[in-house]
Length: 467
Ligand code: HEM
Image (cartoon, rainbow, N blue to C red; front, side, top):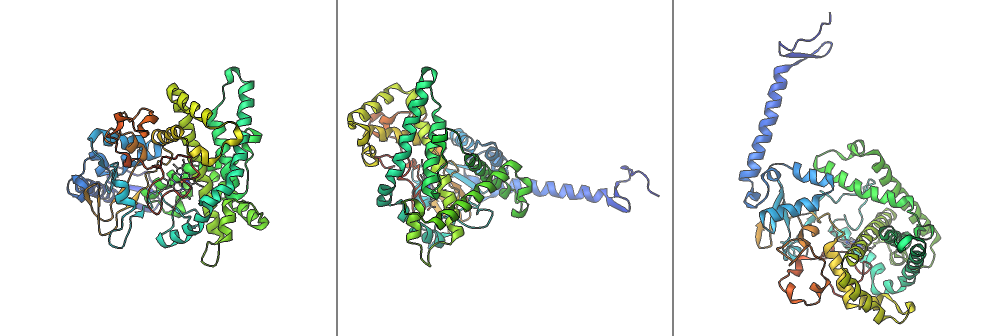
């Protein structure tokens, strides 16, 4: 006969016939707490990273890091830790360090330790749901194979031949801006919208032969929202991975609309790349250069799709971000706006004379772009990597093999350890102004360094002043 369970006899009836011993549950709980307490003490006091400064809670547990990551404020949180401890290295996770010093980039991304380089940390770099790698996530051998092929699409010669496509969208942008400024009170326009439209249209066209028609329709194509959903998904997936949620179960934990957007983006890329290959038009976009050199050692169709997805995402949001930063800071800094305007007006007798080559030679405008990269960096994931087994020296400190290391660009660019007046927009700092002679300029690497740096840097906002 079934009767209500009594909690006083230390046993609980889970379902008729199955009695769970309450004391066993208590012992399990205590063991669990003791295990976590002991491991927290180990990580804070005895772990090889314990000599590095950083918040105790972050040394004991991943929670502060994951919390900042899921809230979308990882760059700010990391900067706060560097400021608080006054150090160019801080421990931000039980097994991870953040560096912002000027030699860290070279130490991490251009050196070999034994025969090995730093490996990308699967913390953030994950394969697409179909398990195929792009050049960004590929292992070293596949990376070399893909990058060699992709390099054809990003050469000087290719950029020259793609210029008419880029110019046609810039013309649409300028005409559209003029028309909207004429019909709105005070000539006000939403530049974030327009700069996003132009970068998405250009990258869609160059990556897959697909234009989003944003500039002509003057509205966001639904695909743009799929892509922003995909970026948010990457952060969610990275968090789930750190919580050790198995890959197969991840869709259960992802917000449904994000999962839908990510899958819609990947499906659309796949359809358009198939269509682009079938039609094979003779136009100088990225795919034509890749397909021309794609032999049996080249890329498979799924790899071409994974890379097309990367180009369109990596090329559009990043460029739009930095351009928005440039417009924002120019509008807040009248002296810089005036100097940039005068330079442009003096350099070009008419709009036909404007070309990628000549724009890149404008010294003041280049300094404006560079300062915008510093103030408004576009790549904020911090390029997390793992130290090779042999261990490595980063910024003059020994770091054991297997440690997770990263450089967050916002934290590096905004630190008083690296820059004078770090939170002020001063293009003159790149033009020899003596106030900034002590700036540690090698700490600033918007396109990263080494063999896995940004292959599209020539397509980003042009700057003759190489970082
Ligand atoms: C403001 C503009 C841009 C910035 C700041 C930027 C920044 C970066 C950074 C920091 C990386 C290294 C990522 C990592 O190690 O995790 C990277 C890689 C990459 N970027 Fe860009 N990027 C920009 C524009 C572009 C454009 C226009 C394209 C072209 C489609 C592009 C394509 C790529 C590709 C394919 C990679 C992977 C390279 C490899 O792994 O070998 N980027 N970018």
